[in-house]
Length: 502
Image (cartoon, rainbow, N blue to C red; front, side, top):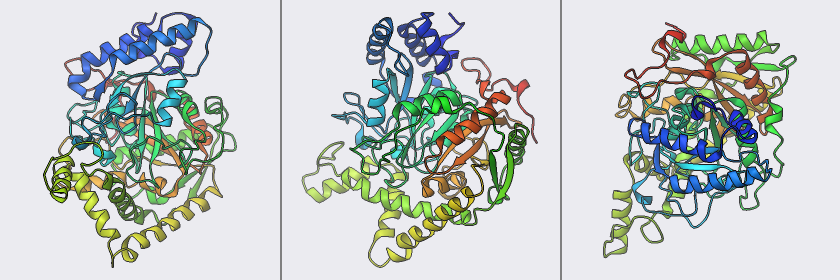
């Protein structure tokens, strides 16, 4: 048995389980013990589910004893609290759903359970997935395991922190404008946002219906491929689900980069990017070239419009989607005698400041006299952004660029300036607007030992390509093997081994 079962990757844990080196119960108990030790520091979870996890682990051990080789059998994972789980409360990080227990399970979660997953808990998040820092949760601020004074990114910050702190072997997140990739970059783990329609959205509490994707956070690329493969594929309960069957992503990760064309967009290397980030990303691109890839300059000329477009489209869709939280059918109700007063008080008390801000922005954009000028125009520019990617992918196989302009910022640093906070997503939102796929893979650290992520973008349904390139890069470097030192006196990790970049 290894020194610590929480040190394992998913694929290594699967090998150990199948070899009989340890049981799923032992693996699960190790992660639950890790949660018990570190949760007060990290606040990665809204709900921990030890009884359910151990019951699933016992069931997994019985299946293993019978020779079952389900792809995730016995593996402890965390689930972002925006995905419905029958019998386990799903809060979306909001007081308005504080006591909501769904009567059904999201397709993505159900498929992982069928594959043998053990769910250790529901991960913390920005309320209704609206945020870039996980400071907007109604329950707690999640802290970055590399430095507890910094944010883990958002909105899937709890999922990323849980993986980075080794409280789960992997996690599900969701990505509407960067909410898987940004936390992955900030926390030094791998995060993949699949193409729109690749993974069912059934059971995902909607924020922006044309933008939302269910994604994966994991310790390495192979792990991300395993989890993605277990939950991807057509679902008739989601009208936007693509009919394509999911390929074997885990098998697709291996392969030479000879002949692979990697695009380098000039619009992603601009003023305002932290020097350490640009140096690390350009070094990663040079590594890809050394591995046999051809680097091709490409242009995505409408990138500078993406943030404006996103915050019109996403808020408009949020305004419509969140109208259902009215204090009548489910969730929190203020209990006022008058129906309209109850509606006003329920939403006023139940929603946090950022959610109310985005609802108001979206409602304004959809209102009579402004629809064509704002929402309609944003959809037209969205088409231009999508066309930019189509032209680029006619020349290259993948695009390489930063995930974010900076490394993780300090808690509270941007809380009073929403516009500055929104700029954290400047390199991630174009991907969601275009509906293509992308991932973040660790590519270095700054001088303060904070992780940096390389973003690899692929065409629609092109997950196999970005996984292959990311895996090749990962095998040639060791950034993904670094782990934060948790539970020690120092909040920083392996400072002597980080890349010192001014």
